[in-house]
Image (tube, rainbow, N blue to C red):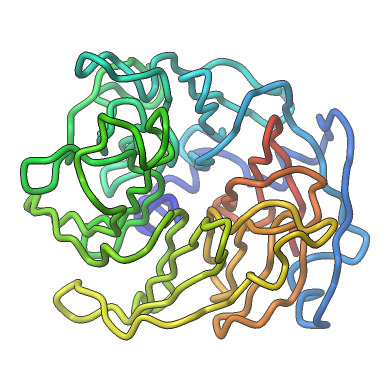
Length: 340
């Protein structure tokens, strides 16, 4: 998931030193895992001696990382704890926001916090809130966070969404997002579930919610290709894990659904634990995508170039603004990998 508009990032880039400079003094608690180079092309992006560093741990389930260049810190969700955590290079992690995704919006909602996080074109924090079952914008500024939100969308045709999960902004300001049922207490059997499907949506700048595909079980991570002509969706289906690709049409709709990468053959294979989940697109067009075993590096055509093996179930990832670091949320931890 690309977490900020290029325009916003470039305007704020001068506000703080590069990530690589900030991380020059290691604050890693430890290093873990390994990196498997499948294609020589991967060595253009990851050094052969690169280490996977733990930058914070002890959480319940980390997700939705977003780099905030304006302030030089990273935010990520700890979903079961209903909090957002801040990581600042050389200062470590600290609580950023409580009640991040379950605010008691409606009676009967449970305490699942925010999942995906991203910045809109104005640099405001947008949250995919599992507990409140909506996409929302934090009303406060990034440097003075408060659990006060404006709903961007929370219903489709009068029925509440399931539990919005991950999202990506198009340059035209529209928001593509997924809505599986993970935030509901009993998944698809939860009596609170109002929709009969799990959807992939587009929210226009005017606030119109368009259902793009209602045929995918467990749609999860979502990303746009560099030219924004292809939408990629991770499918966390434990019977058929895969990544899908769609053409993005001029009107924002999608078509030509097809397989980007089929991971079904890895079910039950030792060392390949986990399912397709979050993604981020590099300026080269390559895609870092969490999946079985850790983080996969894909070419734009779906060729596997490398695997970053985290030794944990791995949920999501994002890039620093200068693309010198990949940040990874993996089960109870926040990790980083230096890039070239």
